[in-house]
Length: 263
Image (cartoon, rainbow, N blue to C red; front, side, top):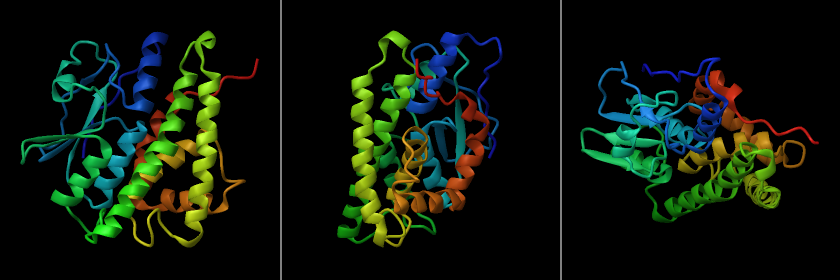
């Protein structure tokens, strides 16, 4: 599947680079910069508006790749300042990923809803949501836990790195780190007797855990302190669907905001 590419050159202004980094990590459609570029991909029934570095986009991509679901990747062009209108018209909130189902004439935002939509309408070899109601409830719970208590605190830490030096939120960052430590402890205990996030089967919960833990480990490493969680992350990175996501994101990792050196 072909995709378009972000056009950032050496002449790109620092201000634009900051906006790009915000969108890459948070999925937020920054005011002046979002336009989906016309894709050369074969017209597919599903089109995913995304960027390969955005952590929440990874969640959707893992779900799509896990079941070899045919789709058109429609990469958001951060460098085009002429018409963010197209994406905003599709989803006024202005955050990605967003899935558009041409067959059904529906637009599906929000990753948990998006993945569950795929499980319901585009099922494959891996059932991302169990048919048993109680098991499905457990998967939804783990999905929310990883999103809310790993993914969101991680984004708080990364987002603070994009602030001006005199506008950082050290209290908020420390609170986010505390939330991560609590979540790491919780999941490390759960994974002592579980192969995947919600049991012995790969599910929607693992689609949520993969990007949250990968980036969480970059901003608040846990390999030395949480053995079960570290082993789980290794299993995730070796899963073909997530390995593919990481491979496609590799050219963009240079845009990941780094921690400021201590003054």
